[in-house]
Length: 148
Image (cartoon, rainbow, N blue to C red; front, top):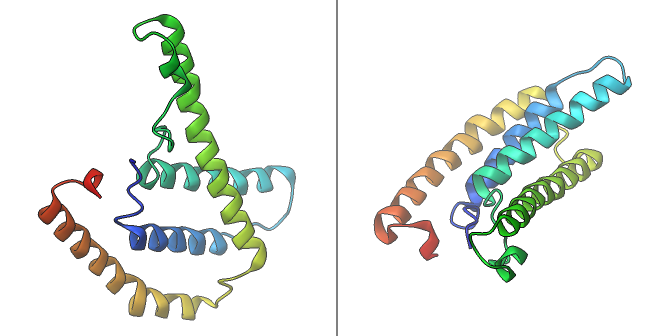
Protein backbone atom coordinates (compact mmCIF):
# COMPACT_ATOMS: atom_id res chain seq x y z
CA UNK A 1 0.00 0.00 0.00
CA UNK A 2 1.78 3.12 -1.18
CA UNK A 3 -0.21 5.89 0.46
CA UNK A 4 2.04 8.19 2.47
CA UNK A 5 -0.95 9.84 4.13
CA UNK A 6 -1.24 7.18 6.84
CA UNK A 7 2.12 7.69 8.54
CA UNK A 8 1.76 11.44 8.02
CA UNK A 9 -1.98 12.06 8.36
CA UNK A 10 -1.25 15.25 10.27
CA UNK A 11 0.81 16.54 7.33
CA UNK A 12 -2.05 15.85 4.93
CA UNK A 13 -4.58 17.69 7.09
CA UNK A 14 -2.26 20.67 7.61
CA UNK A 15 -1.52 20.94 3.89
CA UNK A 16 -5.18 20.70 2.92
CA UNK A 17 -6.15 23.32 5.51
CA UNK A 18 -3.45 25.75 4.36
CA UNK A 19 -4.33 25.31 0.68
CA UNK A 20 -8.02 25.72 1.47
CA UNK A 21 -7.40 28.98 3.36
CA UNK A 22 -5.32 30.24 0.42
CA UNK A 23 -8.20 29.35 -1.88
CA UNK A 24 -10.71 31.22 0.31
CA UNK A 25 -8.59 34.37 0.28
CA UNK A 26 -8.50 34.55 -3.50
CA UNK A 27 -11.19 37.03 -4.39
CA UNK A 28 -12.74 37.04 -7.82
CA UNK A 29 -14.94 40.02 -8.59
CA UNK A 30 -17.21 38.52 -11.20
CA UNK A 31 -18.62 35.04 -11.50
CA UNK A 32 -18.01 34.66 -15.21
CA UNK A 33 -17.38 31.27 -16.75
CA UNK A 34 -13.66 31.88 -17.03
CA UNK A 35 -13.24 32.86 -13.37
CA UNK A 36 -15.20 29.84 -12.14
CA UNK A 37 -13.15 27.65 -14.49
CA UNK A 38 -9.91 29.07 -13.10
CA UNK A 39 -11.09 28.46 -9.52
CA UNK A 40 -12.00 24.86 -10.31
CA UNK A 41 -8.71 24.32 -12.14
CA UNK A 42 -6.89 25.65 -9.07
CA UNK A 43 -8.76 23.22 -6.80
CA UNK A 44 -8.10 20.35 -9.23
CA UNK A 45 -4.41 21.31 -9.28
CA UNK A 46 -4.32 21.25 -5.47
CA UNK A 47 -5.97 17.83 -5.55
CA UNK A 48 -3.46 16.53 -8.07
CA UNK A 49 -0.56 17.84 -5.97
CA UNK A 50 -1.91 16.19 -2.81
CA UNK A 51 -2.67 12.91 -4.62
CA UNK A 52 0.86 12.72 -6.00
CA UNK A 53 2.43 13.68 -2.68
CA UNK A 54 0.34 11.65 -0.23
CA UNK A 55 -2.01 9.21 -1.98
CA UNK A 56 0.32 7.20 -4.21
CA UNK A 57 -0.25 9.11 -7.44
CA UNK A 58 -0.94 6.70 -10.29
CA UNK A 59 -0.46 3.54 -8.21
CA UNK A 60 -3.57 1.41 -7.77
CA UNK A 61 -4.91 1.32 -4.20
CA UNK A 62 -6.00 -2.29 -4.77
CA UNK A 63 -2.44 -3.57 -5.37
CA UNK A 64 -3.81 -5.16 -8.52
CA UNK A 65 -3.94 -4.01 -12.13
CA UNK A 66 -6.19 -5.43 -14.81
CA UNK A 67 -3.13 -5.38 -17.05
CA UNK A 68 -1.59 -8.09 -14.85
CA UNK A 69 -4.04 -10.54 -16.42
CA UNK A 70 -2.18 -10.16 -19.71
CA UNK A 71 1.28 -11.38 -20.57
CA UNK A 72 4.02 -8.99 -19.49
CA UNK A 73 6.38 -7.34 -21.99
CA UNK A 74 3.71 -7.01 -24.66
CA UNK A 75 2.35 -3.83 -26.19
CA UNK A 76 -1.20 -4.66 -25.02
CA UNK A 77 0.05 -4.93 -21.42
CA UNK A 78 1.81 -1.56 -21.66
CA UNK A 79 -1.21 0.19 -23.16
CA UNK A 80 -3.69 -1.19 -20.62
CA UNK A 81 -1.33 -0.45 -17.72
CA UNK A 82 -0.87 3.15 -18.90
CA UNK A 83 -4.60 3.75 -19.20
CA UNK A 84 -5.22 2.15 -15.82
CA UNK A 85 -2.60 4.32 -14.13
CA UNK A 86 -4.04 7.45 -15.75
CA UNK A 87 -7.48 6.37 -14.53
CA UNK A 88 -6.27 5.99 -10.93
CA UNK A 89 -4.58 9.38 -10.73
CA UNK A 90 -7.60 11.14 -12.25
CA UNK A 91 -10.04 9.21 -10.05
CA UNK A 92 -8.16 10.00 -6.83
CA UNK A 93 -7.81 13.66 -7.83
CA UNK A 94 -11.50 13.94 -8.70
CA UNK A 95 -12.52 12.41 -5.35
CA UNK A 96 -10.34 14.91 -3.50
CA UNK A 97 -11.73 17.69 -5.72
CA UNK A 98 -15.27 16.77 -4.67
CA UNK A 99 -14.29 16.72 -0.98
CA UNK A 100 -12.71 20.19 -1.22
CA UNK A 101 -15.76 21.57 -3.07
CA UNK A 102 -18.06 20.07 -0.42
CA UNK A 103 -16.06 21.68 2.40
CA UNK A 104 -16.08 25.01 0.57
CA UNK A 105 -19.84 24.89 0.09
CA UNK A 106 -20.39 24.14 3.79
CA UNK A 107 -18.24 27.14 4.87
CA UNK A 108 -16.65 25.12 7.65
CA UNK A 109 -13.62 27.38 8.03
CA UNK A 110 -15.18 30.80 7.53
CA UNK A 111 -12.80 32.88 9.65
CA UNK A 112 -11.62 36.46 9.54
CA UNK A 113 -8.08 37.05 8.37
CA UNK A 114 -6.83 37.95 11.86
CA UNK A 115 -8.21 34.68 13.23
CA UNK A 116 -6.58 32.77 10.39
CA UNK A 117 -3.19 34.30 11.22
CA UNK A 118 -3.66 33.46 14.91
CA UNK A 119 -4.50 29.85 14.04
CA UNK A 120 -1.43 29.58 11.81
CA UNK A 121 0.99 30.90 14.44
CA UNK A 122 -0.56 29.18 17.46
CA UNK A 123 -1.50 25.80 16.00
CA UNK A 124 -0.47 25.09 12.42
CA UNK A 125 3.23 25.94 12.65
CA UNK A 126 3.82 23.98 15.91
CA UNK A 127 1.82 21.04 14.50
CA UNK A 128 3.89 21.14 11.31
CA UNK A 129 7.16 21.07 13.23
CA UNK A 130 5.83 18.24 15.42
CA UNK A 131 4.77 16.33 12.32
CA UNK A 132 8.23 16.67 10.77
CA UNK A 133 9.85 15.37 13.97
CA UNK A 134 7.44 12.42 14.23
CA UNK A 135 7.92 11.41 10.59
CA UNK A 136 11.71 11.68 10.97
CA UNK A 137 11.57 9.41 14.02
CA UNK A 138 9.41 6.90 12.13
CA UNK A 139 11.82 6.90 9.19
CA UNK A 140 14.80 6.53 11.53
CA UNK A 141 13.27 3.66 13.52
CA UNK A 142 11.50 1.73 10.77
CA UNK A 143 13.53 2.75 7.77
CA UNK A 144 10.72 2.98 5.23
CA UNK A 145 7.09 4.01 5.04
CA UNK A 146 6.13 0.86 3.17
CA UNK A 147 6.66 -1.20 6.31
CA UNK A 148 3.68 0.47 8.02
